[in-house]
Image (cartoon, rainbow, N blue to C red):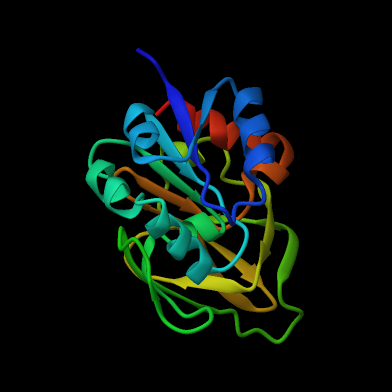
Length: 200
C-alpha cells in the first residue's frame, strides 16, 4: 500500500519545508498539495501553518480545497499543525470572525495570560486522552509558538500549562488530529510523532 503524506500548501504555511524534511526523516513520502486533484490522490493529509486564521481560510477557499477537505475527512487521516490545528475548528476570532473547517467543535481565541504572548519555546504536554500519534510521547516536551488557543471541551487529547493557564495543546476526533505545537521544531519527539502519524 502506498503511504504518501500530502502537505497542503495554502500560502500562509511558512514552515512547509521544515515539515517536509521532518516527515522524510521519519520515513514518510511527501507530496506538496496545491490542487483538489492532488489532495484526492494522497493517503494522509497535513495542514501546516504559520500566519492568521482568516488568511489561511481565504487561501483554502481560493484554491477550492475547503470542500475537498470536507469530502475526504471521513476516509483520510488529517493532522493540523499550529494554525493548521486552529482551522480544524468551527470559528476563529483573529481579525474578526472567520468560519473554520468545522471538523472539531471549538473556537480559536486570543491567549489571555499574565505573561508574554506569543507563548514561545519548549513546554511539556499532559495527556488527557491518549491516541495513536501520541504513543510513547507522554512525557515529552514540544516547541510552541502561538498567541491564539483552541477552546474546546470534547476532543482534548493533551493540555499544556503556560503562566498558570492551561490550554489545549492537542485534539483528536475520529481521523482528525491537531497539535498546537510544532513537531518539525521539536527534535526527536517531533520525529516520533510524525512516525506515529505515518504508521496510522
